[in-house]
Image 1: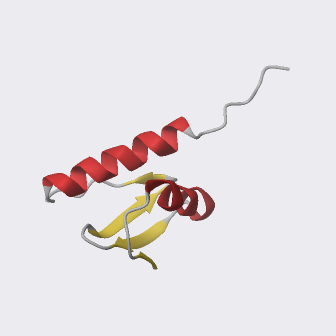
Image 2: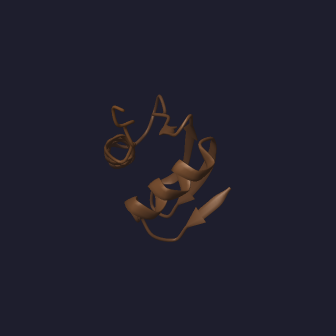
Image 3: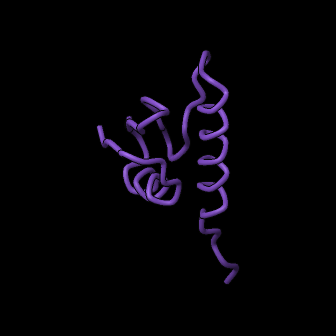
Length: 70
């Protein structure tokens, strides 16, 4: 489990792109799970956690490399 002392979306997204599956801990947000390169939305969480997960997932989606046509 990686611990992030501050919420840094780009650094967190980089970690998720490398490891694809696991758990991280972010100060003020708590424990966040990710699988297949996307964060899993907990069933019960605070609005700030849901907003952060949505932001991280959209950042990960925008950073995906699409194959170029040959």
